[in-house]
Amino acid sequence: MKAGEQFRVVLVTCGTLSESRRIARHVVSTRLAACVNIILSPVESHYTWKGNLEKSREYLLVIKTTAKRLVALEREVNRLHSYDVPEFIALQVAAGSSGYLSWLQEGVE
Image: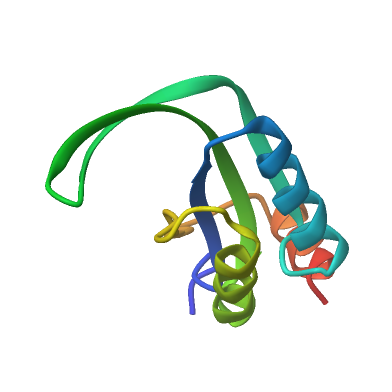
């Protein structure tokens, strides 16, 4: 396994800043993630929902975790999120500094 293969960066969008902060605090405090960045400037999302073209302002969470914690993290995001189908996209980390990846690993153990 390459140095970063066990790590994931997860993207989640939320409709409000308070919801973003609540999810971030919960997943870090329960060690499902080592760190969550919240992009404070809203992103503008365009998508189709139930046959209608929609546009909304959302806050983007960038969550750092491990492959082992991914299923539990997704379950908690779905439980805490107000959307029927929240965005949950996990990207595999190809590489990273050994110090940061060690810290990330410790943060979810």
